[in-house]
Image 1: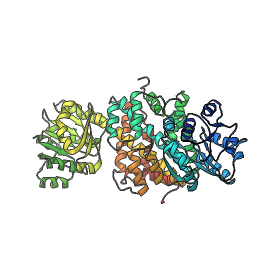
Image 2 (image 1 turned 120 degrees about the vertical axis):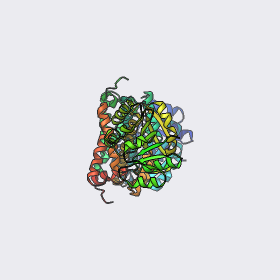
Image 3 (image 1 turned 180 degrees about the vertical axis):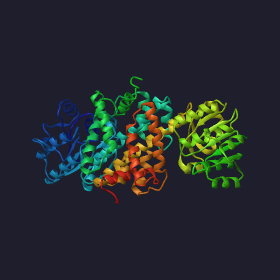
Image 4 (image 1 turned 120 degrees about the horizontal axis):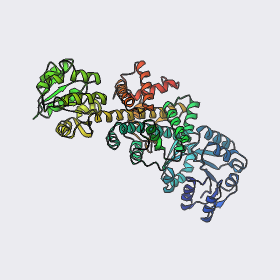
Length: 294
Length: 294
């Protein structure tokens, strides 16, 4: 059984690492703050003082970090994963970062004979705990096959999307569609509410036709129930749309609706609403429409 | 059995009228051009020379017309429905028009003791032919109940949304969500295509998660197959978004994403693409991204 290194034991990484341990894997773990490391060490994981040490003691290294700069630092910085790598190892970054950063890490590690997968997930902390994440994977096919047994423990489905960066590109597409659809639903339900038509009936009627979406179903219900407890925090979705915007810029694809929604999210962040569920996008439109406080 | 007047025998109205005739109703019919009138007359319908004459010879009058000015003219203009109404009749407008115009007709006809329903549909010409339309209804409850037997022939479900105009408001919400979601999907699939990731795989991966929608499913497939035969014509969706924009303006709800999409549709109309399916919204973004002709 391959020895697994795990770097980044936050709200997502910790339950993912725990699921691997429950499945019988030996883990070497590292985290910026020590609390989660101690917690996993008590359950049998080996603590490591640096990403370098994780790599030295593992066959496969997994990282789950907040953003592109974190991955770049942990992988390529001093004391980073690169310094501990040896030929034939596999590196799997499951963070949501830019396809560009993912491709950079792929390239740097390949020079050392180490294959890399970019494997961002969707499904949130609940999916991480229950091992029901969806995993979108970029990288070569042999590396993907080697990682499948791990993906099957952490998730309920994994799709090999293409070469390096294709997993991150797919995640960006996902966040574009979800973000813009939330805005679509917000515009419809706010118009209904303002015009005095029951938004619950509108949601119900629209779910029966071409306007149907999981966002209309789930975020629409949050809107009706005024439930903006995350779920998925607005600030994190804004971070993901920054990746989408950067990628659109580099690919010369003007993501007009995405940019609009990203800007609206910025306004909500400035109002201190970044910790609310991303369905709170509707609050901005309600405020602009004079529905505040209703 | 109540005698039914039917005004507007176009691509939607004709099959709806035919379904009522097949169910055994006697119809009095009128249309601006004579071809459809003759066709229905051969099957037993009574032709009428004007909307006024339709009203004089019917218990319930149904209209299915292109736009708000058409409904206003047919209802309130010279030789219009109003001139032929008598107390206790029911008027059902199934066109997609502005809630404001619907409310105006409601008010004018109520003065003559005639109740009105605004009852726009979704489901397109296929739904009209098969009697599987979804019908969104505004007006009073007793009028709705009286109309249900007719709705059940023309559609597969009808929802009573609220008072006068509530049906049209709901249809506007539907067209907002569908239009903005088409743009969301277009941005994601165009980014994938430009970045060299298979858009078919992206659609498939996204359908498994929060990004799922009927638009991603059906219009996403059209995008992959480059099939822009309507379906629902872009020009008609643009007309419906004009109604949404007007309603947003009157209700002081800034429909930011809807306005963006409406503007993009205008660009495509200027390129002569109004007769294509509304999923062709992606063509604009592809052109802007340098993917033209691929």
